[in-house]
Image 1 (cartoon, helix red, strand yellow):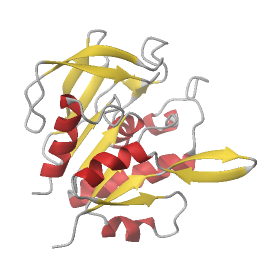
Image 2 (spheres, one colour):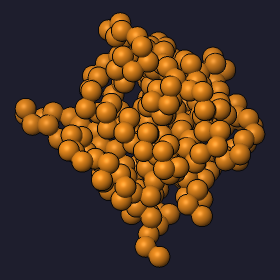
Image 3 (tube, one colour):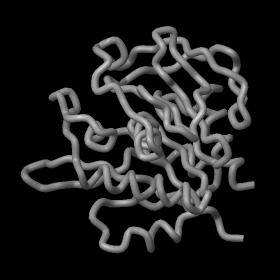
Image 4 (cartoon, one colour):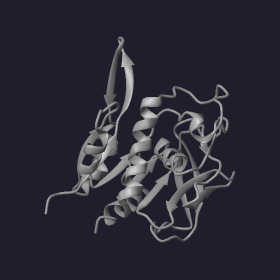
Length: 219
């Protein structure tokens, strides 16, 4: 049996007027540790669906903000560095995973993308409380069908947007004291996401639970 192939969404920067696509290696390390092969999913592929069909599962990474037009709002100047190309990449990944019931993990922006492209919305700016790395805070969790978290966990925080309306098919399984939604899972499909960055502390118990759970979705 061939190793499972995980499609990981690219992000991009412009240096010296050259657009460069990349994936931070720390997203890949926990996947490689669990025996997965990985492939970078880049923007503007003319036949992206063909590439997605090759993948057994997906990781949508962190990154810039999602265009509020996808949840029927105008950009109030609070959503930064939006990119229709990046949004379209994430949207197609989410919809493909949903259609074919493939495992999907979202991290930070990926958490928000899953919610938005399954029908939810975001707060365009929740203020500076959460976006100064390396801040950490406690999160309360609830029992659920996928992730066996302790009742309270310590997570990092590096974001200024957050889920507002939860997508219809998603359940909230972790929340901060200020009511920020920190983790969600699909009611029936192998799809879940977290607002924090488990790849920053991959050997913590909380991070191991996340990546082990993702790996177990293929069993």
